[in-house]
Length: 91
Image (cartoon, rainbow, N blue to C red; front, side, top):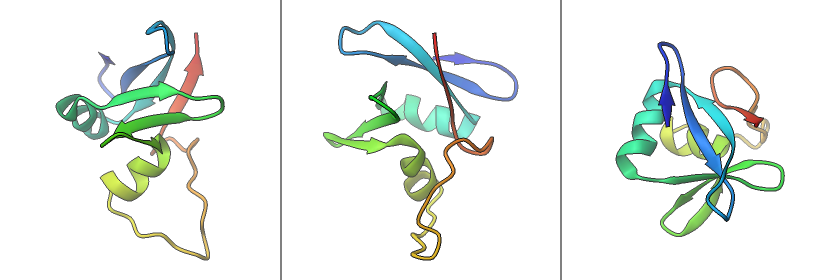
């Protein structure tokens, strides 16, 4: 995991443990992932976090679990490209 002044970057690995990309998160999320030793990986389309043996979409984990937001049936989608949440790029 890498860090800069404004954001932190989590390396994304494949099944062979090769770094294939990075995801940019805010510092609080970065520290949370680091302290809990969560695995973060790039799936076919999205980034996932492994928590308690379950694969969870990382942007939903950040929005609902980390920030404790409630699910709204009228707005069921989480914007995972917004600067407040998560960026992903491939190397």
